Length: 521
Image (cartoon, rainbow, N blue to C red):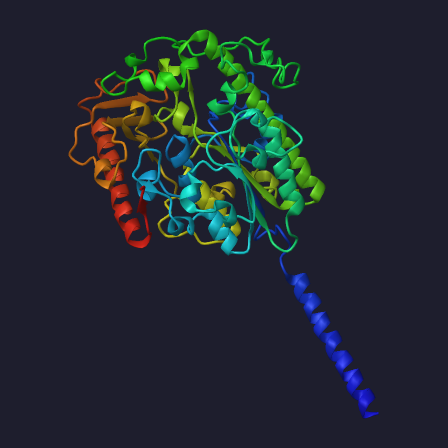
């Protein structure tokens, strides 16, 4: 009898424990819950803010992107922290301007382990998010050792690929690009679907997808003789529904100043065009510029198709309702504009970026809006952490965009400091202030391998200044700097620019006291 009593007691105890455990499991927030949603961060490469259908482009077909943007919240005044590839990307990872984190093509510093620990992928991974990276890392990851080990899922590469990567001589091409398709964008789409198929059920995920398109390395490699002949003369593309004839029957409008004198906008003593023209020769002649536009538009539509397939995969897995999608670009691009090509300057065409957030959990009444607040790419980093319920490191300068999405009554910035410290291709140092109505820019001699003292412009006379009235001159063609020379407006903008510039230099000093930074060897 005593033995039976003991057995019954043990059985009841086990049932009670099991019941409590099951109840506890039920009380756990499900993967991608309202408090900790899944997050997908989509980053295009060289995509101008005005090159999407939802943003008013008359030709480009982007139905899937448009649907997400219209079903979410679109930001019409978003700007990249620094308008060139590598520094813009690490600025997004770290949520800091280039002058503070110190990493760029022309700086003296490399990314360190100490810095990466405060990146949004590292912070989310530390807080039980399943993390993945797909595509172009583009931040010289060899300085971080085995970067792929810093993500739960890695399907990336550094630098650039060709549009048809199996034809490249990249030594690791076979390892990176084993897939059913030969074109880079759908190959990346396959990797996205593979990641989604493998995500665990017991934790939310954050997937960062860094597309290669529509970067110049992609548009030029669609054909062996870049931009001199139609890309659909390449047998691999002939008859393709997107990369074949699409947009070739359209009246492609290229900038009126294509092939004209670029020095009418920025003097030769400030920025020579030799190196820039050597990298972007196709944007300095009208015929090749037209071909560039066609290929550029095709690649955007190809990108749109892959994003549509991603959304379908989310729905198929049953997680679309708990997955936040954030979309932007690493910077814009000049394509014959101002008589030149490329990026690295503070014109809106270079520094303004497409940006929207699709949050399926947002009340329907709050969706479909366009917000014109001044937004920085560093805000996206803080926003990602906010969605994940992770506190942003105190040195991060961005603001979470979630209060704007929820229409909360919060104070927001009235102006945005912009900078470009990219000094290759004879670029000058550039910094400026952007308001809704005005943009002030000043330029200084660039220094390759710059250090902190080189970007302290206190007491220095600019080489060149620009002032644009954005309401009356949204294309930024008429420099009003002489007309407003003695005005309080210009004085105020100069002072504000200097104040913000000094503040960043001070932030760099504080950053160095708490974060290990290393010079390149």
